[in-house]
Amino acid sequence: MLLILTLKMVKFALIENRTMKKKPLILVTNDDGITAPGIRTLIAVMAEIGDVVVVAPDSPQSGMGHAITVNNTLYLNKVSKENATITEYNCSGTPVDCVKLAVHEILKQKPDLCVSGINHGSNSSINVIYSGTMSAAVEAGIEGIPAIGFSLADFNWNADFEATKPFVKKIAEQVLANKLPDGTVLNVNFPKLKQEEIKGIKICRQAKALWMEKFDKRKTPYGKDYFWLSGEFVNQDKGEDTDEFALANGYISVVPVQFDMTAHHAIQQLNTWDF
Image (cartoon, rainbow, N blue to C red; front, top):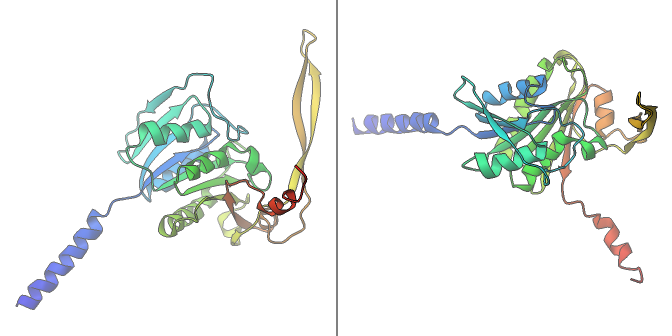
């Protein structure tokens, strides 16, 4: 009789422990703005995993890189939502501003995960430098928060994000379960394909590519010159282990990105110079 009672107590304790286990706290942000379809998809997926706090720009902030607001005021507005597990704020600043405000002003504890995106357009290769999406993830990484930037290779505002959902969830759950190496965040890019067409996930390096840029010079009706940036993206890398190769061949690319920008391989050479 005592053995049966003990077993029942152990079983009850295990069930109670699983029930009481806290959901992870997830910070969601982006650079396309809080109303963008990409972030709405990301919020929905993260709500399946944990408690979600959204802090995102109130207007598009693409290409802002790691910019922060230092000479203007910042505004933060709570957005009313019916879902009790999701709290949303829009911010007048950049994606990095959003992360800083979330960490220092909104959240009472450090989140278990920060996810940024899903960006409308690829952030593979050199685009990671300019990307507000990835800079928000990097800022979270600097704060010691595991972070992922998600992007879809489709710039259309009405892009279809349905195919990304199971992979976004799987990658986020893996990061929560396994953490990330110190000083590292993930840059995840999806090809513009249907779910059944995606071949899988590849861990990659950043391809060596660049923008061949030019400026289109025009005049206003009042005769004042203005410029419109344009250009062509050129992939110079023939390697088959790159993010560009993965995307071109139907795979999701996952690149571990470090924010220690020291060129360690150059230190020895520079020490031979006569300073």
